[in-house]
Length: 467
Image (tube, rainbow, N blue to C red; front, side, top):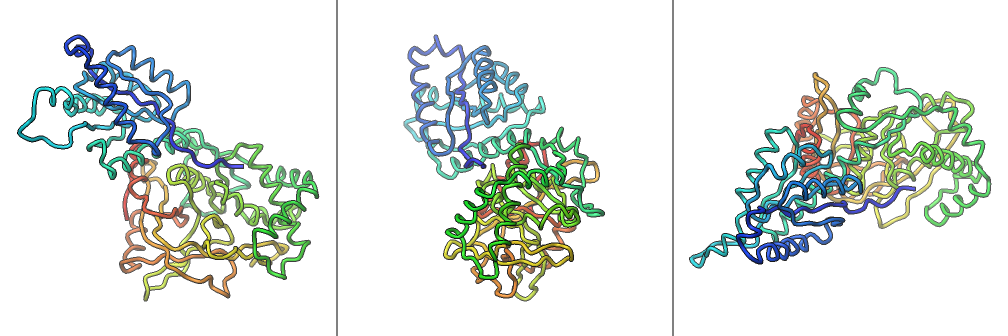
C-alpha cells in the first residue's frame, strides 16, 4: 500500500555572473563541465530532475517555476563563481520549495602555484555569502553545506539536507487520521490542530468507528483466506491461534487497510477505549495495524495524531520509523523497556528469527481474543524523538541517540518489546527529558539521525533540542 521512500527529487541551479559570459571566452562551458562534475558526486543521494547553469534573474525564475510545477522536493543551489544576490535571492525567498545551498569548489588546496585562472575557476565563497545574507535578511529558511565537492562526509550531510527537504515538503501535505476521540485527559499531545496545519503542515482527518464497521462488513472471505495463507508462510504461529481468531484479525486488517486507503492517510491514531466499547467490532485491530506500520504508515496510540504525523515524516527522513514508549526502567544497567499495548513496526524485528503470532487476551474486559505479535528489535544504534509545543504554541523537537542491546524476547512478555541501553545514568536522561517537556509517546528510528532531525527542524523553522 505504501511506496518505498524514494530519493529526493531535486532541481540543481548553478549560479554565476552574466558579466563573465563576455569577459572570459569559453568560461561558461568550463563552468558547465565543473557543475556536471560536482553533481556527479551526488549520484545515489538524489535524483536530479532538472539542472541548469544560470546567470540571469529570468533564467532562475523560470527554473524555479518548472521545479514547482513538477512538485520537486528541493532546489539545490550551487554557486560556481561570484554571483550577485539580487539575480537569485528574490526568487529563492518567494518559493515554497526548500532551498539547499552547496558552497563548494574544485580546488582542494592552495599552494605557491596559485594563478589568476585558479581564482577564476574557484571564487565561490563571496558570492555565496552575498546570497545567504539576503536570504537571512528576508527571513527565508535554507539549508547549507560548505566543503570540497569530493568530501564524502560533507556529501553525506548534503544528502541529509535533501532528505530533510523532502520530509518537510511531505509534512505540508500529510494526512493523519484520528479514529475516534483522543484519550480523555491525556494532555501531552494536545495541540491547536489549525496551527499544526498552518505552521507545520499535517492535517487531522476525523474518522468514525462506524465507517470501520461498515468496511468490515464488506470484507470478502476469499481475501481473508489469502491473508491467512500468507501469514502461515511469513510467521511462526502459536497453536493457541485458532483459525477463527486468525480470520477475525485478518478481517479487521482488510477493513483497516480500506479505511486508510479511502482517506489517503499517511498516518493514523486510534483510541482503543472507543473501539473496545463498540460491540459492532469483534476485537481490536492491532494485528493489521502492525502490518501497516511495517509498510510505512505513521502511527501513535490513544488518539495522538501529532506523534503519528511525526512518525510519518521521520519515515520520509530516515526510511523507516516506529512508535514506542518508555515503560519500566532498569537503574542498575541503565536500560529502559520500550513497548506499548501491541503496536510496533515488524519491519524492525530481529532478522534471525520469524515473528511469532500469539493469542492475545486484552487486559481490559469486553474484548475478544485477537492475534498478537511477539518479537524484539534488531540490535544497534537508535534515535528517539518527539514533537511538542512550548508555552507560546511553537513546535519543537527533542532528540536522543542511544542503542538497542542484543537480547532474546522476554518469554513471559508476549507482546512486541525492546530495550534501550544508555551510556549514562538513565535517571539523568529521564530528568533532562522531562525538564525539556518531552511527551510520553516517542518515535524511534534505527541509526544516528539527530543531525537529520536538526536539519528538518531548521527548514521548518522549529527548534530541535538534544537531550
